[in-house]
Length: 189
Image (cartoon, rainbow, N blue to C red; front, side):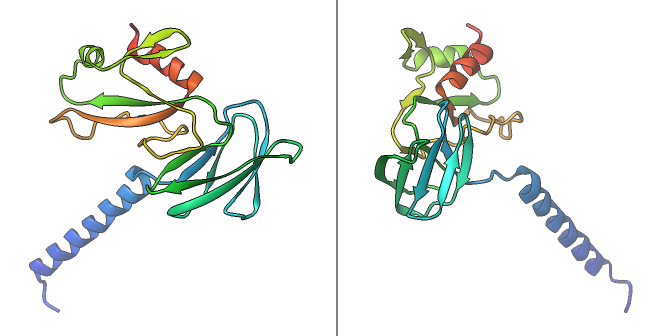
């Protein structure tokens, strides 16, 4: 076979393309999953869609498989006494089951070039938590299931800004105390 520069260029481009996608899917792509979260000091047992029994200890998060559409959950206390039997609707690719019906806050963080986060926060509504006002309008959540966020409780916001041409935002769900700690450290009012 002759030395064909076009074929060599095509093969090099194809290999570079495969390597780039491999790096993206291994290291950069955001994983989508569902969590059962327990911020309390109690242990709970649960069954999702009448499947096998799961255990979640104090302060733990457990990845679970959910089907799109209607799902059911039975939650038991540490003595395996039924606490509740409930159903919820799954529409998105990530979500959180609040097994103990505790307080969570969904925060919106803004990204962008030359972003003035303090003045941006001041124009948003305020939320009162334990008698104190917090800027940025974090959304309070304490129901069984939510999927109205981008980053789950066990994930951090991106450290790297991927698009600096415009102002964008991402939402993250926090346990109550984690949100208060984050707010105090990040905003420093």
